[in-house]
Image (cartoon, rainbow, N blue to C red):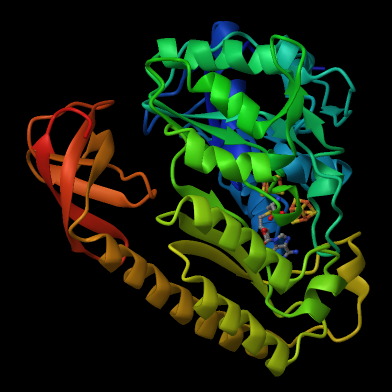
Length: 444
Ligand code: SAH
Ligand code: SF4
Ligand code: F3S
Protein backbone atom coordinates (compact mmCIF):
# COMPACT_ATOMS: atom_id res chain seq x y z
CA UNK A 1 0.00 0.00 0.00
CA UNK A 2 1.05 3.58 -0.67
CA UNK A 3 2.73 5.32 2.18
CA UNK A 4 2.08 9.00 2.83
CA UNK A 5 4.80 11.43 3.91
CA UNK A 6 4.92 12.20 7.62
CA UNK A 7 2.52 15.03 8.51
CA UNK A 8 4.28 18.31 9.37
CA UNK A 9 1.30 20.37 10.46
CA UNK A 10 -1.86 19.64 12.42
CA UNK A 11 -5.20 21.12 13.35
CA UNK A 12 -7.39 19.89 16.20
CA UNK A 13 -11.07 20.88 16.09
CA UNK A 14 -12.99 20.23 19.30
CA UNK A 15 -16.76 20.12 19.71
CA UNK A 16 -18.96 19.47 22.73
CA UNK A 17 -18.13 20.00 26.37
CA UNK A 18 -15.17 21.61 28.10
CA UNK A 19 -13.67 18.19 28.75
CA UNK A 20 -13.41 17.78 25.01
CA UNK A 21 -11.72 21.17 24.77
CA UNK A 22 -9.25 19.98 27.40
CA UNK A 23 -8.66 16.73 25.48
CA UNK A 24 -8.15 18.76 22.29
CA UNK A 25 -5.45 20.83 24.02
CA UNK A 26 -3.75 17.68 25.25
CA UNK A 27 -3.81 16.11 21.78
CA UNK A 28 -2.32 19.29 20.32
CA UNK A 29 0.47 19.18 22.93
CA UNK A 30 1.09 15.53 22.15
CA UNK A 31 1.38 16.23 18.42
CA UNK A 32 3.67 19.20 19.10
CA UNK A 33 5.89 16.97 21.24
CA UNK A 34 6.22 14.72 18.17
CA UNK A 35 7.61 17.61 16.12
CA UNK A 36 4.42 18.68 14.33
CA UNK A 37 3.46 22.36 14.24
CA UNK A 38 0.00 23.86 14.35
CA UNK A 39 -1.23 24.83 10.87
CA UNK A 40 -1.38 28.59 10.46
CA UNK A 41 -4.83 30.21 10.30
CA UNK A 42 -6.20 29.83 6.77
CA UNK A 43 -3.61 27.23 5.76
CA UNK A 44 -4.20 23.55 5.10
CA UNK A 45 -3.07 21.07 7.73
CA UNK A 46 -1.45 17.72 6.91
CA UNK A 47 -3.27 16.10 9.82
CA UNK A 48 -6.76 17.04 11.02
CA UNK A 49 -8.17 15.70 14.27
CA UNK A 50 -11.94 16.08 14.63
CA UNK A 51 -12.61 15.79 18.34
CA UNK A 52 -16.31 15.01 18.31
CA UNK A 53 -19.37 15.07 20.57
CA UNK A 54 -22.16 12.49 20.64
CA UNK A 55 -24.51 14.08 23.15
CA UNK A 56 -27.28 15.03 20.70
CA UNK A 57 -28.04 13.81 17.19
CA UNK A 58 -27.11 17.11 15.53
CA UNK A 59 -23.71 17.15 17.20
CA UNK A 60 -23.01 13.56 16.13
CA UNK A 61 -24.08 14.09 12.50
CA UNK A 62 -21.87 17.16 12.20
CA UNK A 63 -18.77 15.01 12.00
CA UNK A 64 -19.82 13.50 8.67
CA UNK A 65 -20.41 16.88 7.01
CA UNK A 66 -17.12 18.14 8.44
CA UNK A 67 -15.22 15.18 6.99
CA UNK A 68 -16.71 15.92 3.57
CA UNK A 69 -15.40 19.48 3.72
CA UNK A 70 -11.82 18.64 4.60
CA UNK A 71 -10.28 18.82 1.12
CA UNK A 72 -6.99 20.65 0.85
CA UNK A 73 -6.53 23.50 -1.64
CA UNK A 74 -4.62 21.20 -4.00
CA UNK A 75 -7.53 18.74 -3.97
CA UNK A 76 -5.79 16.16 -1.78
CA UNK A 77 -7.17 14.93 1.50
CA UNK A 78 -5.34 15.50 4.80
CA UNK A 79 -4.77 12.60 7.16
CA UNK A 80 -8.03 12.59 9.13
CA UNK A 81 -8.44 11.28 12.65
CA UNK A 82 -11.85 11.19 14.32
CA UNK A 83 -11.49 11.41 18.09
CA UNK A 84 -13.90 12.00 20.97
CA UNK A 85 -17.29 10.59 21.81
CA UNK A 86 -18.58 9.89 18.27
CA UNK A 87 -15.39 7.89 17.69
CA UNK A 88 -16.14 5.86 20.80
CA UNK A 89 -19.81 5.31 20.00
CA UNK A 90 -19.73 4.87 16.22
CA UNK A 91 -16.17 3.95 15.36
CA UNK A 92 -17.07 1.17 12.93
CA UNK A 93 -19.78 3.20 11.27
CA UNK A 94 -17.35 6.07 10.69
CA UNK A 95 -14.88 3.73 9.04
CA UNK A 96 -17.62 2.45 6.70
CA UNK A 97 -19.33 5.74 5.98
CA UNK A 98 -16.21 7.88 5.59
CA UNK A 99 -13.33 6.27 3.67
CA UNK A 100 -11.29 9.49 4.04
CA UNK A 101 -10.95 8.81 7.77
CA UNK A 102 -7.75 6.92 8.52
CA UNK A 103 -7.85 6.91 12.33
CA UNK A 104 -10.62 6.51 14.88
CA UNK A 105 -9.51 7.15 18.44
CA UNK A 106 -11.70 7.11 21.55
CA UNK A 107 -11.52 9.58 24.44
CA UNK A 108 -9.49 7.17 26.60
CA UNK A 109 -6.99 6.19 23.89
CA UNK A 110 -5.70 9.39 22.32
CA UNK A 111 -2.27 9.09 23.92
CA UNK A 112 -1.72 6.43 21.24
CA UNK A 113 -2.11 8.92 18.38
CA UNK A 114 1.60 8.94 17.45
CA UNK A 115 1.64 5.16 16.80
CA UNK A 116 -1.64 5.41 14.95
CA UNK A 117 -0.29 8.14 12.69
CA UNK A 118 2.65 5.89 11.80
CA UNK A 119 0.21 3.10 10.90
CA UNK A 120 -1.95 5.45 8.84
CA UNK A 121 1.11 6.69 6.97
CA UNK A 122 1.84 3.12 6.02
CA UNK A 123 -1.63 2.97 4.47
CA UNK A 124 -3.47 1.13 7.24
CA UNK A 125 -6.73 2.43 8.72
CA UNK A 126 -6.67 2.08 12.49
CA UNK A 127 -9.23 2.17 15.27
CA UNK A 128 -8.47 2.37 18.98
CA UNK A 129 -11.47 2.71 21.24
CA UNK A 130 -10.09 0.76 24.18
CA UNK A 131 -10.79 2.05 27.64
CA UNK A 132 -7.65 0.94 29.45
CA UNK A 133 -7.77 0.98 33.22
CA UNK A 134 -4.41 2.76 33.42
CA UNK A 135 -5.03 6.35 32.54
CA UNK A 136 -3.99 8.12 29.39
CA UNK A 137 -2.89 11.09 31.48
CA UNK A 138 0.32 9.34 32.53
CA UNK A 139 1.30 8.91 28.90
CA UNK A 140 0.83 12.55 27.90
CA UNK A 141 3.65 15.11 27.80
CA UNK A 142 3.84 17.66 30.64
CA UNK A 143 1.97 20.90 30.09
CA UNK A 144 3.93 23.87 28.83
CA UNK A 145 1.44 26.45 27.62
CA UNK A 146 -1.51 28.16 29.20
CA UNK A 147 -3.72 31.20 28.81
CA UNK A 148 -4.87 33.11 31.92
CA UNK A 149 -7.80 30.74 32.33
CA UNK A 150 -7.01 27.02 32.05
CA UNK A 151 -8.95 23.77 32.16
CA UNK A 152 -7.83 20.80 34.21
CA UNK A 153 -9.70 17.51 33.93
CA UNK A 154 -9.75 15.91 37.38
CA UNK A 155 -12.48 13.33 36.93
CA UNK A 156 -13.72 11.43 33.93
CA UNK A 157 -16.62 9.20 33.10
CA UNK A 158 -20.00 8.71 34.66
CA UNK A 159 -21.76 5.95 36.60
CA UNK A 160 -25.11 7.72 36.86
CA UNK A 161 -26.78 6.40 33.70
CA UNK A 162 -29.44 9.04 33.21
CA UNK A 163 -31.79 7.36 30.74
CA UNK A 164 -31.28 9.92 27.95
CA UNK A 165 -27.50 10.21 28.10
CA UNK A 166 -24.63 8.65 26.13
CA UNK A 167 -21.81 9.81 28.39
CA UNK A 168 -21.54 6.63 30.53
CA UNK A 169 -21.06 4.70 27.27
CA UNK A 170 -18.70 7.09 25.52
CA UNK A 171 -16.56 8.08 28.49
CA UNK A 172 -16.77 4.93 30.55
CA UNK A 173 -16.87 4.48 34.31
CA UNK A 174 -16.09 7.26 36.76
CA UNK A 175 -12.42 7.67 37.62
CA UNK A 176 -10.70 10.35 39.70
CA UNK A 177 -7.18 11.40 38.74
CA UNK A 178 -4.70 11.20 41.63
CA UNK A 179 -4.26 14.27 43.85
CA UNK A 180 -0.52 14.53 43.34
CA UNK A 181 -0.80 14.43 39.55
CA UNK A 182 -3.38 17.19 39.63
CA UNK A 183 -1.31 19.41 41.89
CA UNK A 184 1.69 18.86 39.59
CA UNK A 185 -0.33 19.70 36.48
CA UNK A 186 -1.83 22.77 38.17
CA UNK A 187 1.65 23.98 39.18
CA UNK A 188 2.77 23.65 35.57
CA UNK A 189 -0.27 25.55 34.31
CA UNK A 190 0.30 28.34 36.81
CA UNK A 191 4.00 28.53 35.91
CA UNK A 192 2.88 28.82 32.27
CA UNK A 193 0.63 31.78 33.08
CA UNK A 194 -2.71 30.40 34.34
CA UNK A 195 -4.36 32.64 36.94
CA UNK A 196 -7.61 30.72 36.97
CA UNK A 197 -8.13 26.97 36.78
CA UNK A 198 -11.46 25.32 36.08
CA UNK A 199 -11.52 21.78 37.39
CA UNK A 200 -13.41 19.58 34.96
CA UNK A 201 -15.32 16.34 35.15
CA UNK A 202 -18.61 14.88 33.92
CA UNK A 203 -19.37 14.64 37.64
CA UNK A 204 -16.59 16.80 38.95
CA UNK A 205 -17.95 16.98 42.48
CA UNK A 206 -17.71 13.19 42.72
CA UNK A 207 -13.91 13.54 42.61
CA UNK A 208 -12.17 11.85 45.52
CA UNK A 209 -8.54 11.29 46.36
CA UNK A 210 -5.91 11.25 49.05
CA UNK A 211 -4.02 14.40 49.90
CA UNK A 212 -0.26 14.46 50.61
CA UNK A 213 -0.83 13.28 54.18
CA UNK A 214 -2.85 10.30 52.96
CA UNK A 215 -6.16 11.74 54.15
CA UNK A 216 -9.23 11.02 52.02
CA UNK A 217 -10.51 14.26 50.53
CA UNK A 218 -13.20 15.42 48.15
CA UNK A 219 -13.11 18.25 45.65
CA UNK A 220 -13.06 20.82 48.49
CA UNK A 221 -9.75 19.32 49.67
CA UNK A 222 -8.25 19.58 46.21
CA UNK A 223 -9.46 23.18 45.90
CA UNK A 224 -8.03 23.98 49.33
CA UNK A 225 -4.61 22.72 48.31
CA UNK A 226 -4.71 24.49 44.95
CA UNK A 227 -5.57 27.72 46.76
CA UNK A 228 -2.10 27.56 48.33
CA UNK A 229 -0.48 28.26 44.94
CA UNK A 230 0.13 32.02 45.30
CA UNK A 231 -0.17 32.89 41.60
CA UNK A 232 -3.35 30.91 41.16
CA UNK A 233 -6.04 33.46 41.93
CA UNK A 234 -9.29 31.75 41.00
CA UNK A 235 -10.66 28.23 41.13
CA UNK A 236 -13.82 27.03 39.42
CA UNK A 237 -15.30 23.60 38.77
CA UNK A 238 -17.84 22.07 36.42
CA UNK A 239 -20.08 20.00 35.92
CA UNK A 240 -21.57 18.98 39.22
CA UNK A 241 -24.32 16.52 40.00
CA UNK A 242 -26.87 17.59 42.66
CA UNK A 243 -26.43 14.34 44.62
CA UNK A 244 -22.66 14.81 44.95
CA UNK A 245 -22.91 18.34 46.33
CA UNK A 246 -21.46 17.55 49.77
CA UNK A 247 -21.66 19.80 52.82
CA UNK A 248 -17.85 20.03 52.75
CA UNK A 249 -17.87 21.38 49.20
CA UNK A 250 -20.67 23.78 50.04
CA UNK A 251 -18.69 25.01 53.07
CA UNK A 252 -15.70 25.62 50.81
CA UNK A 253 -17.75 28.32 49.07
CA UNK A 254 -17.65 30.14 52.42
CA UNK A 255 -14.12 29.24 53.53
CA UNK A 256 -12.01 29.26 50.38
CA UNK A 257 -11.89 32.79 48.96
CA UNK A 258 -10.30 31.58 45.73
CA UNK A 259 -13.31 29.40 44.97
CA UNK A 260 -15.43 31.62 42.72
CA UNK A 261 -19.10 32.29 43.52
CA UNK A 262 -20.47 30.31 40.61
CA UNK A 263 -22.14 26.92 40.55
CA UNK A 264 -23.22 24.98 37.48
CA UNK A 265 -25.67 22.44 38.83
CA UNK A 266 -27.88 20.87 36.17
CA UNK A 267 -31.40 19.91 37.19
CA UNK A 268 -32.76 18.93 33.73
CA UNK A 269 -36.47 19.24 34.61
CA UNK A 270 -38.84 20.50 37.30
CA UNK A 271 -41.23 17.55 37.46
CA UNK A 272 -40.46 14.70 39.83
CA UNK A 273 -42.13 12.19 37.54
CA UNK A 274 -39.91 13.25 34.67
CA UNK A 275 -36.81 13.32 36.89
CA UNK A 276 -37.57 9.77 37.96
CA UNK A 277 -38.02 8.62 34.36
CA UNK A 278 -34.69 10.29 33.62
CA UNK A 279 -33.12 8.32 36.48
CA UNK A 280 -31.81 11.56 37.94
CA UNK A 281 -32.10 10.28 41.53
CA UNK A 282 -32.96 13.73 42.89
CA UNK A 283 -36.25 15.57 43.12
CA UNK A 284 -37.01 19.19 42.40
CA UNK A 285 -37.27 19.75 46.15
CA UNK A 286 -33.98 18.06 47.04
CA UNK A 287 -32.29 20.11 44.30
CA UNK A 288 -33.74 23.35 45.66
CA UNK A 289 -32.58 22.36 49.16
CA UNK A 290 -29.01 22.04 47.90
CA UNK A 291 -29.26 25.52 46.38
CA UNK A 292 -30.62 26.90 49.67
CA UNK A 293 -27.61 25.50 51.52
CA UNK A 294 -25.21 27.02 49.00
CA UNK A 295 -26.95 30.39 49.15
CA UNK A 296 -26.86 30.31 52.94
CA UNK A 297 -23.03 30.28 52.89
CA UNK A 298 -22.55 32.35 49.74
CA UNK A 299 -25.58 34.59 49.15
CA UNK A 300 -24.15 36.17 46.00
CA UNK A 301 -23.51 32.83 44.24
CA UNK A 302 -24.36 32.79 40.53
CA UNK A 303 -26.32 29.68 39.62
CA UNK A 304 -26.35 27.87 36.34
CA UNK A 305 -27.87 24.66 35.03
CA UNK A 306 -28.85 22.45 32.11
CA UNK A 307 -32.39 21.68 31.00
CA UNK A 308 -33.95 19.17 28.65
CA UNK A 309 -37.42 19.86 27.25
CA UNK A 310 -39.63 17.22 25.67
CA UNK A 311 -38.32 14.16 27.48
CA UNK A 312 -40.58 11.21 26.48
CA UNK A 313 -43.96 11.52 28.17
CA UNK A 314 -43.44 15.12 29.35
CA UNK A 315 -46.86 16.76 29.58
CA UNK A 316 -47.66 20.46 29.40
CA UNK A 317 -48.30 20.47 33.16
CA UNK A 318 -44.94 18.80 33.81
CA UNK A 319 -43.20 21.32 31.59
CA UNK A 320 -44.89 24.08 33.57
CA UNK A 321 -43.11 22.69 36.64
CA UNK A 322 -39.79 23.31 34.88
CA UNK A 323 -40.82 26.93 34.25
CA UNK A 324 -41.84 27.29 37.89
CA UNK A 325 -38.47 25.96 39.04
CA UNK A 326 -36.68 28.48 36.82
CA UNK A 327 -38.69 31.29 38.42
CA UNK A 328 -37.95 29.94 41.90
CA UNK A 329 -34.17 29.71 41.39
CA UNK A 330 -33.28 32.90 39.52
CA UNK A 331 -30.45 31.52 37.37
CA UNK A 332 -27.54 33.66 36.22
CA UNK A 333 -27.15 31.64 33.00
CA UNK A 334 -28.21 28.24 31.67
CA UNK A 335 -28.07 25.78 28.82
CA UNK A 336 -31.28 24.28 27.49
CA UNK A 337 -31.84 21.58 24.91
CA UNK A 338 -34.55 19.71 23.08
CA UNK A 339 -34.52 16.06 24.01
CA UNK A 340 -32.64 14.06 21.38
CA UNK A 341 -33.11 10.28 21.34
CA UNK A 342 -29.71 8.59 21.43
CA UNK A 343 -29.21 5.04 20.15
CA UNK A 344 -28.67 2.53 22.93
CA UNK A 345 -30.08 4.70 25.73
CA UNK A 346 -33.26 3.56 27.54
CA UNK A 347 -35.19 6.77 26.85
CA UNK A 348 -34.85 6.35 23.09
CA UNK A 349 -37.39 3.53 23.11
CA UNK A 350 -39.74 4.94 25.76
CA UNK A 351 -43.37 5.61 24.92
CA UNK A 352 -44.61 9.14 24.48
CA UNK A 353 -41.87 10.67 22.32
CA UNK A 354 -42.83 14.35 22.13
CA UNK A 355 -43.54 15.85 18.67
CA UNK A 356 -40.95 18.29 17.28
CA UNK A 357 -43.30 21.30 17.19
CA UNK A 358 -44.22 20.83 20.85
CA UNK A 359 -40.53 20.63 21.76
CA UNK A 360 -39.78 23.78 19.74
CA UNK A 361 -42.52 25.65 21.52
CA UNK A 362 -41.40 24.52 24.98
CA UNK A 363 -37.76 25.32 24.28
CA UNK A 364 -38.74 28.81 23.15
CA UNK A 365 -40.75 29.45 26.31
CA UNK A 366 -38.02 28.05 28.52
CA UNK A 367 -35.33 30.12 26.82
CA UNK A 368 -37.44 33.27 27.16
CA UNK A 369 -37.72 32.59 30.90
CA UNK A 370 -33.99 31.84 31.21
CA UNK A 371 -33.08 34.98 29.29
CA UNK A 372 -35.24 37.11 31.59
CA UNK A 373 -33.56 35.49 34.54
CA UNK A 374 -30.09 36.16 33.14
CA UNK A 375 -30.87 39.81 32.41
CA UNK A 376 -32.25 40.24 35.93
CA UNK A 377 -29.13 38.66 37.41
CA UNK A 378 -26.83 40.90 35.37
CA UNK A 379 -28.83 44.00 36.26
CA UNK A 380 -28.68 43.16 39.93
CA UNK A 381 -24.87 43.22 39.75
CA UNK A 382 -24.74 46.76 38.30
CA UNK A 383 -23.19 49.05 40.88
CA UNK A 384 -20.95 46.35 42.34
CA UNK A 385 -17.20 46.79 42.60
CA UNK A 386 -15.46 43.55 41.71
CA UNK A 387 -12.42 41.93 40.15
CA UNK A 388 -12.10 41.00 36.49
CA UNK A 389 -9.56 38.55 35.13
CA UNK A 390 -8.44 40.02 31.81
CA UNK A 391 -8.56 37.34 29.12
CA UNK A 392 -8.27 39.15 25.79
CA UNK A 393 -8.39 42.41 23.83
CA UNK A 394 -11.77 43.81 22.83
CA UNK A 395 -12.73 45.17 19.41
CA UNK A 396 -12.48 48.85 20.37
CA UNK A 397 -9.14 50.60 20.93
CA UNK A 398 -7.88 50.12 24.48
CA UNK A 399 -10.75 47.76 25.29
CA UNK A 400 -10.27 44.59 27.32
CA UNK A 401 -12.53 41.60 27.95
CA UNK A 402 -12.58 39.41 30.99
CA UNK A 403 -14.74 37.62 33.50
CA UNK A 404 -16.26 38.77 36.77
CA UNK A 405 -16.28 36.38 39.75
CA UNK A 406 -19.82 35.41 38.69
CA UNK A 407 -18.55 34.35 35.24
CA UNK A 408 -20.15 37.28 33.46
CA UNK A 409 -18.28 38.74 30.50
CA UNK A 410 -17.22 42.28 31.26
CA UNK A 411 -15.49 44.88 29.11
CA UNK A 412 -13.66 48.05 30.05
CA UNK A 413 -11.25 50.54 28.52
CA UNK A 414 -7.87 51.28 30.06
CA UNK A 415 -4.27 50.25 30.42
CA UNK A 416 -4.24 46.56 31.27
CA UNK A 417 -2.71 43.32 30.10
CA UNK A 418 -3.89 39.77 29.57
CA UNK A 419 -3.69 37.86 32.84
CA UNK A 420 -4.17 40.95 35.04
CA UNK A 421 -6.73 40.88 37.78
CA UNK A 422 -8.12 44.39 37.90
CA UNK A 423 -10.76 46.13 39.98
CA UNK A 424 -13.76 47.56 38.16
CA UNK A 425 -17.16 49.05 38.85
CA UNK A 426 -19.94 47.37 36.89
CA UNK A 427 -21.87 50.20 35.28
CA UNK A 428 -24.27 48.78 32.72
CA UNK A 429 -25.76 45.38 31.94
CA UNK A 430 -26.44 44.10 28.44
CA UNK A 431 -28.05 40.75 27.71
CA UNK A 432 -24.75 38.88 27.50
CA UNK A 433 -22.13 41.18 28.96
CA UNK A 434 -21.53 44.13 31.26
CA UNK A 435 -19.68 47.36 30.75
CA UNK A 436 -17.31 48.25 33.51
CA UNK A 437 -15.19 51.19 34.60
CA UNK A 438 -11.58 50.48 35.53
CA UNK A 439 -10.89 51.45 39.13
CA UNK A 440 -7.45 49.96 39.77
CA UNK A 441 -4.94 47.71 38.08
CA UNK A 442 -4.80 45.56 41.18
CA UNK A 443 -7.24 43.33 43.00
CA UNK A 444 -9.92 44.79 45.28
N1 SAH B 1 -22.69 15.42 33.63
C1 SAH B 1 -23.46 16.55 33.42
C2 SAH B 1 -23.62 16.97 31.95
C3 SAH B 1 -23.65 15.99 30.86
S1 SAH B 1 -24.01 16.40 29.21
C4 SAH B 1 -24.76 16.38 34.15
O1 SAH B 1 -25.08 15.36 34.66
O2 SAH B 1 -25.54 17.29 34.22
C5 SAH B 1 -24.53 18.07 29.22
C6 SAH B 1 -26.00 18.27 29.09
O3 SAH B 1 -26.48 17.79 27.86
C7 SAH B 1 -26.82 17.53 30.12
O4 SAH B 1 -26.81 18.17 31.36
C8 SAH B 1 -28.17 17.53 29.47
O5 SAH B 1 -28.90 18.69 29.78
C9 SAH B 1 -27.85 17.54 27.98
N2 SAH B 1 -28.16 16.24 27.36
C10 SAH B 1 -27.58 15.05 27.62
N3 SAH B 1 -28.15 14.08 26.86
C11 SAH B 1 -29.10 14.68 26.11
C12 SAH B 1 -30.05 14.22 25.14
N4 SAH B 1 -30.13 12.94 24.81
N5 SAH B 1 -30.86 15.13 24.58
C13 SAH B 1 -30.81 16.44 24.90
N6 SAH B 1 -29.94 16.92 25.81
C14 SAH B 1 -29.10 16.08 26.42
FE1 SF4 C 1 -25.08 12.06 31.54
FE2 SF4 C 1 -26.47 11.90 33.76
FE3 SF4 C 1 -23.92 11.20 33.75
FE4 SF4 C 1 -24.58 13.74 33.51
S1 SF4 C 1 -24.96 12.45 35.31
S2 SF4 C 1 -23.08 12.65 32.29
S3 SF4 C 1 -26.45 13.66 32.32
S4 SF4 C 1 -25.55 10.16 32.68
FE1 F3S D 1 -20.17 15.48 24.10
FE2 F3S D 1 -18.67 13.54 24.99
FE3 F3S D 1 -18.65 15.88 26.19
S1 F3S D 1 -20.69 13.35 24.20
S2 F3S D 1 -20.70 16.61 25.88
S3 F3S D 1 -17.98 15.47 24.14
S4 F3S D 1 -18.48 13.90 27.16
